[in-house]
Length: 593
Ligand SMILES: Nc1ncnc2c1ncn2[C@@H]1O[C@H](COP(=O)(O)OP(=O)(O)OP(=O)(O)O)[C@@H](O)[C@H]1O
Ligand SMILES: [Mg+2]
Image (cartoon, rainbow, N blue to C red; front, side):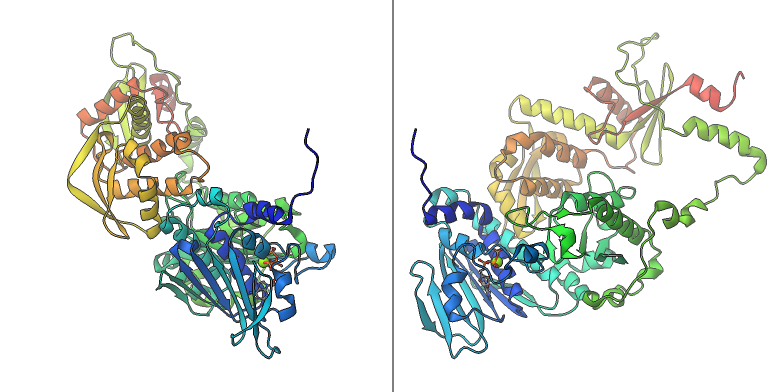
């Protein structure tokens, strides 16, 4: 048994760094947060090689006194809190006094700073911890070079330059959204990537999330007791294949909080297809004492004292915002300008009942009173959807196929078929999606799936992030049956696709796939997530609604359904077909009663 010994200081910091410094983007987040905590109005970021080789953040904040420079790099030294009381009411981004020390444990760090009253600037290099005079007008410059130079094992986990850069870009956008009054600049390998001039929230939202988002977004703003929510939520028409456009903040801090994500998702539940993700930039503000930010090393998760209350508030405000008549947002710019200094707004109603009186007044579609009993009867036949049959009978009395033969397609969505039992109604997209999914799985289990080369390669415009994922996950994409090559920094050439997926909607399919791949954490093998990827492929590969099918095509679909395992549920758990027996139909028309 070895003796118990205290760990050396440097090792303690390196262990702490493991939690705080996951990649260049996490360093960037810490440095920008420090600048904002120092009251900066200009933050300028320079990166080389995805931030791995060099990251320099310059701000015009209130600076660090020369004598404090070594302390800034010391673990557990902070100017932001001094007591437990302070911690519980913390309003700054930082509070642990740990970030710079952690970064300095795994990279070369230099701080240069000057406070307003100092005769000149001072500088300290973390390795030497010697303070020396330097030249700087005001504010602070933090420079980090050679990330993980002394921890090669960590360096191996870094992704390509383009991916690390894309993550840094995400960080800058997140910080910029929450701080519209601050000017931000980002330069990578000598070229300017972003420049956001100080302004108001609508302008910043438009700049960061784009005009298309902004044009589809509704302003959200409400206040109830200690809670306040404001921001922009995109209408379902602007839904995305990934969660990329979801920006949710608590007291100015970007968070990935399950409770909030759930409340927001629920607010869209009625209006959004399950595979699509809503887009929003919303800011929740509450008394810092009502939320614990000290629960996650990167501070991206929080714990609410009154989680239920927060959930209800966010859900109702957003649902209401999405349902509000368009007149309310005739001028979103004006509706939200100066959102940081909101005037009091009416509290959202506390209960759904008081919230939606209008919905309760919608008259039933009964025009002639004489028919009402009949309608009531029909409604009680359909009040709950008919339960789909599970498991098809192998044989039918007359030897016809279990799902029968197609007779028609209606509204471009449903296929009607007559079988021995009566009428079968098929949701053609859902059914086809299920079939494709199972076929893809089977093909992949048996080796590389057959490919369909494209006569003319498809050129796909992608974001730098998507291009990076495509390059990194080239093997995975190849195994799934795709042949993609880079065609420039923001374009891919698609040369072959899995034969099963020769669809007209390849761009959406590929974007969905790249979004999935980008979301997978590095630590999880792509193999583990194979079925999720196949589900995305099946969803996009399946026949779209409003495509007219011929009778032979419809019958082929029915036969495929019969041959497919678990064909009666789509990949989202919805039924793919229902049976209405002749008896069900007779009842509807009161035949024989
Ligand atoms: N850009 C800056 N301008 C002014 N002061 C700074 C700047 N960056 C760091 N400091 C000072 O250095 C201290 C240490 O920074 P560091 O990021 O390590 O810890 P923190 O921000 O206090 O807490 P956390 O670890 O939660 O980020 C800060 O408390 C602050 O006083
Ligand atoms: Mg900090």
